[in-house]
Length: 382
Image 1: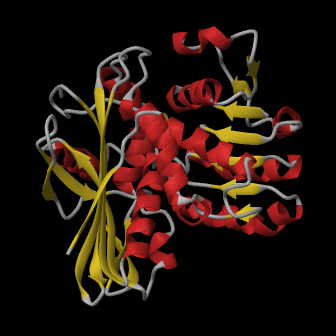
Image 2: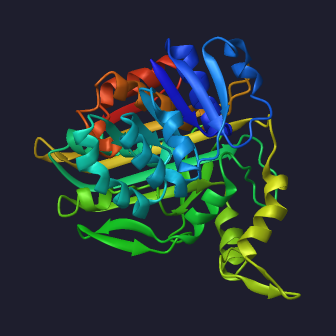
């Protein structure tokens, strides 16, 4: 089994580690710059792990790199997802990506006929949110005869927060800022509806060490579920979790125009405010080795056997001190590798383009997470 991981950053490295430690796969990790792989990958270098210098903007080279691989896992920025999916379909390789942009997922769905013709599976929006949270939400809906409301909460947080944002970069600051500026889709009255990011703040209480967190709307995490369940579920929403006070600061930063992608003239030079913001802030929010916690809760409410019922799923995952792998790398990168392994094993319902919440079987997926120490707890109430 040959697997190609595109992107040698945090999530790509975690996916490669998981493939190597939990399967017999041979892995190639490709990136534009591969100065030094993380120490946790060193045991496999020169044996089952190869590295490749590759610029994903070079489509001919990327297509050639994909040839002969059973699956391609994209941990590149979301704007690469459509061309990478298309190239993988052309190369005859299964494909999964970290997603996060629903409009791009819609474009990837147009590859369905080609994917079926080439006998490959394409699963966009894979990771913690979107993906894990959506798989759990879909399972909660299946357990109820009638579902009235689904609420999804996810956060990646430093165990010991540092002001003023009480946040650290756990994947891509650029991606996080997109979520803070892109309207979020929800279901209201059974109809897909857009709401402002960073809005409708609420408090959510978790066990130690998290205690009370704040939750607010962000784009991307709900994936395509509002359209899938329109008319069948009355209310559905996804919210990001942060330490109290974060949303207020980020909303002020956004409303002042500092996250805008429209260039402004600075001494005769066009500058995108967001680019400058990222350049200034990203180094201050990257604290390698600082322990983090991944937090998730999904609550589906409705009826079962004619009585009120709920299905609740929860996750609190910790930093892997032994290997230096963050909780967000474990929950996001491992989810990507588990999906790819299921694609190769034929466990995702056949070829074509499908969202994870339809393609990925709940019980085997949760069992695979459990093998890696990522524990989903659940309860059903009535």
